[in-house]
Length: 539
Image 1 (cartoon, one colour):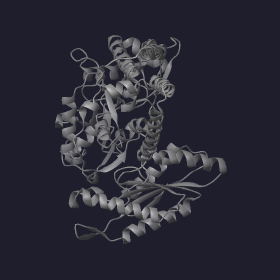
Image 2 (cartoon, one colour):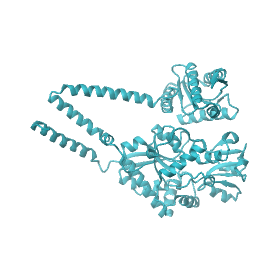
Image 3 (cartoon, rainbow, N blue to C red):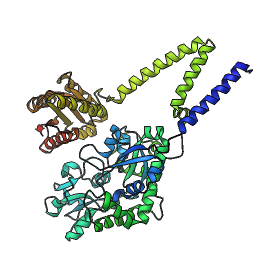
Image 4 (cartoon, helix red, strand yellow):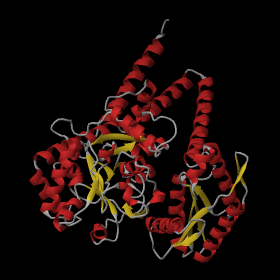
């Protein structure tokens, strides 16, 4: 194929221009820092020493990173805040793999505890002794190993009097609760000081040997900011290595700058000793994890019924700093330069009177815009019920809360949970369970106003946000919906089945935050479930 002189000149200019764009993009002001937010799993303590050291010793700053370490607070879990886009990274646990199975594109970057420090303390010598006893455990999957240990021993939540954890070790010491989910590195110190006799159950002793704290981010962060992810992860590993080698200095730094819990030096030293034993830092590289161990964790969660659905792509879940990008993905990482190059090509095409290229670019742009709009819609819509999903729900709360506060309007939230939904799935199959979810969604839509936002926020959990409804009108709406569901004829596998729901209602009080309002709504729903189900409870 022959190339004309004009074409040769154009190609030479094109290559020179492209190279200039790439070099310009990779040149960064050495004094410019990128701020990233990291959600911790708990309050400041030695559990996060590697992050403190990496920040205080300048390991992050060396790579142009200004790292903000955020303590745990009431409201959404660290993984939920990560999925909402509130933070860039989060510290979770092995239960993160369940969120990945449920569609949240999490990536596990590193784990610093080869074994989980989570355990259960009890007044009784056997797990089976806890039937109908008061057991305080952390809500959600932040301690999936404890839930898996219960299920492996045929102990369900219904057989326990479950009390949400409120960091209240004193309730166990005073005899108000019978068992408590703790960390071996924290509460054991206090129990030893109190000289209190107790029994402990470690998940690993029951074959549930999970990773401990796991550093997480989302796939788009790994794809769009690979250098940041790599530098942040490696700097954290370096921070942990320094912390392990310089325990006393690390404790002094925590005491001076990160001691929001007011821990003593002895408590921090005890915590350091317990956690370092779980790291195996002398024989296993810090942060190391592999797909085989994650496969074991996935299998255990499936065996205990916590995890369902198709197999997880562990190669996408477990981070590798070695690039596996396709050629197109590599090109997309230079999207800004590509945009400029496309413009140059477009102008060049006009210069050579190639009108057809202009038409094709226009058609392609329209197609991309259509796909973008469709993707935005799908990202905020529950595929099964066509209701808003959790992401859209959280966005609507912030929007409506702002309007209500600014205009002094009433604003209420209703949480709905299907009673005994797992039994429905187990008895009639998941197709029947899906049918129940779709039918309930139709009932909710037909009994609410167009201005109300109806969402599916979890497996069998729904929510309604309503501007202008006070406690009385919101409660009346909730009870009307409850009766509609109770009276509805659900036919599953040719059998008429009665299905009920439990509802929790909370109304905005003064300048309450969204997290506080959601917490009150969740507490009201929990009260409805715990008080016998098929009822409405008000916060």
